[in-house]
Image (cartoon, rainbow, N blue to C red; front, top):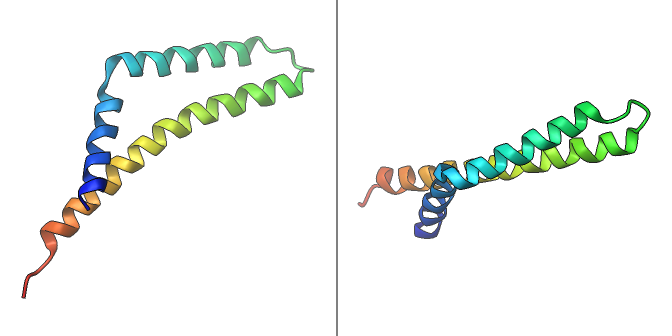
Length: 83
């Protein structure tokens, strides 16, 4: 349980870090710009860019899930009964 809570704290610190937020935003903005400027007949290039954007979003989603898991672990500890 303690490890889950610590991972949640670390994930929250990462998501709250302005430098990391700036990096994710810059990379995602760059990928969106590349998608917009990609030639219509460049299906492979477009697919790679969309996959890269999805991967970037998946990292953020994974950090958020770690936070949720840590909060759930904390609730389970608080809700436990000692008989």
